[in-house]
Length: 327
Image (cartoon, rainbow, N blue to C red; front, side):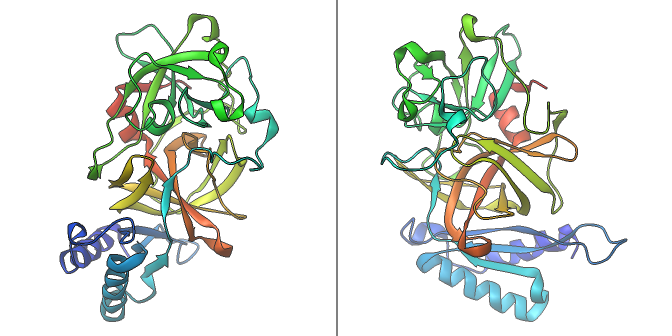
C-alpha cells in the first residue's frame, strides 16, 4: 500500500469512531498511525498499512472498527495490537531493577546513554548534545519528564549525573534546566523534550555512540533497523514498526498526556527499552542518523509479549527546542 492510501485509511477510521473525550483514560487508549511493512519483493520499495494500538473501552471500539475496515478494504495491511498501559520511562522507585552498571555510574566526560535527571526525578537517560542559536554553551538533550520533572521543575534547577536513583547528589550537578517544551494536559502534544545547559567544568563531552559519532538526523519512512543506548537496558536493537501514530496516551506522574505523530519501535530480542531509558536517542546504525527521542513504552504488544517503545520524531524535537544536534 502506498503511504497516501494508508493516510486515507487512517482518516476514514478516525472519522467513524467515538471521540476520545467521551471516555475515561488511560483505560481507553486508542492510537492510530501508519505501519511500515517488509518490502513485497527484491525490487519493491517501502510498503505501508494502518497501525492500530489499543486497550480498554475506547480501544476496543476502535479495534472493532479497524477490523471491519480491514475486511472491506485493506486485508492484512491493518496491524492491530492490544498494548496495555503506556508510561513515561523514568526509572522505577523500587530497588532491584537490573541496569547496565557502567551507565549508572558517575562518568566524566559525559557521553550518550548515561543516567541523568533533575534533582527530584529518579533517573532517565542522556540522549545527546545540542547547541542553541545565540548561546555559546553546550546542552544536554533528554525528555521534559527527565530534566524538567514533567513541568514541575523551575528553570535553573540542577541536573545531576548520575540521576538521584543511581546515587546522584548535589555534588554531581552537571548542568541546569534551560528549556522544556510544556506538556499539555490531554491531547495535541508532539514532543516530550528538554535541555540542560552544561556547567563550564563539565563541558568536555564524548560524542561516541556504539556505532561511532552520528552524522546527522533523518525522518523514518521505512521499516528501518534502529538502535539506542540507554541507562536501563543499555545497547538494544529494533526496527521501526509504525510512524505518524496519533493519540498515543501516556501515563505520567502528573496524569495522562496524549501525543500525535509519533514513531513506534519493536525490539529485535525482547523489549527495546524499559523504565529509565527515557531520553535515549534512537538512531539508524547504517547511516548513523538520529531518528527519534525515546520517551515511553507499553506493557505489551511487541514480539514475545514484550512492550513497544514510542519516540518523538527528532526533527520535531530540535525545532521545538530551537536546537541543533552536535555530531
